[in-house]
Length: 362
Length: 171
Image 1 (cartoon, chains in turn orange, blue):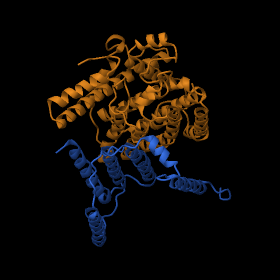
Image 2: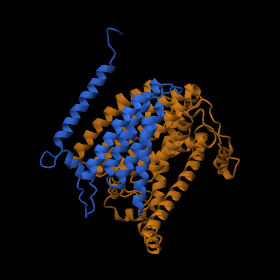
Image 3: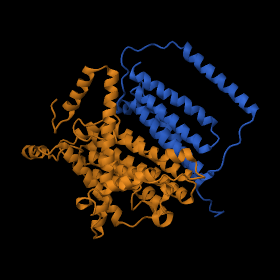
Image 4: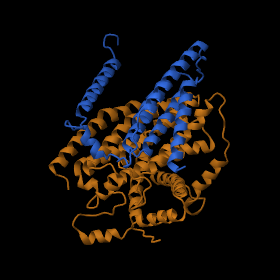
């Protein structure tokens, strides 16, 4: 087995060939599916935990506080302790709730984000699903998470939950449009919906630079719309604490609450990775077309580090939004989407198509 | 049994099981959720056929769009304690007959259709093929249906805006 940190494709291929040679295809495929599932699940849990830690530290930094600092060095094990606490907590059954839907809802939310993470390219060759329609697939599966939120709000038999779910539904359904349209702007430039082709197309410069004006507009729109789509502040009306106690997950406790919490952070991670992949080159190092020496130096940094770095940058931006801007009202929220973002987006697509047609991009 | 056969039977069993639950459930939101499972399993079958585009469209439009719309309207109109009355025996018999007739008819048609087994692997149409196909007005092109559907959607959108618009006189 040749393990190469710069290109995982030969490594994964050798695992595949080794398994196929040693057992029947049935078991080889089953074991491969289990390996990928366990790997992604582990990654999901670890990233989720440390995003919570990062959020608390960044929030503390913004508010001139220290943040968690007791459990482990710099409070590094705080979220693990929180997780253990959540696992041990009692699951409170609601007497007049619709029990089946109440229990299904957290799983729908988490499965939707789990399916989306499979299509994200982490590094060269480290990519579980590389569909020809990758971007469309991610949009499709992530649009199902809202069903879980709506069900959670309705089946709790609680007015606050219901209002939170309705707000969240209206918000996600409308902001999904802007997310999709801003991604389509870049798809026009890339000429493909496949993530591996999109990343490969940024070898001579990331799309946010090569696509200049329309790409930058699309990136800004994507940032705003995806922050709203993940129900994060300043668009977190679905769980506005001051009005709705906790919105759609008011009645949930213990690990079921943790599922919603984890899914929210993982959705943020997913949209940040998509932003990093589509606009900032994914795992592709920072290249400038023609500067061979400079590109060579940049290639020394492993692709996985580039990917994590870019994703962390976008996540930091989203956390910065949350702790800086005040929460919007529901009418302001919908006005922002339908009266500003959507027309800007539609115009931007025409602009991008024109620029690609005239060959004015780099 | 190969792995794809197992997955096929799994998806088919899910589809049949939840289809029956969808029409027999007496709680309307549960019926909508069972319908969601049916639609998602159908998307799974499309993924098995390697037709990723259709699968993703199925997920976006049906699971992510229509079911969300149905759930939304249920949320606005019904209360959690609401439960449909069990239907009378007469209705049950008639619907069972109608269902059986439909099932027999479709099974007969499927069994009598001479399916040609394909030796070549069905090719997965890329986005480019689909894009060119939609805007192609020559042979094998879909420009006319594409345009007709867009006009239909535009008309539906205008109609919904007109209906939803507040009347100035009554306001």
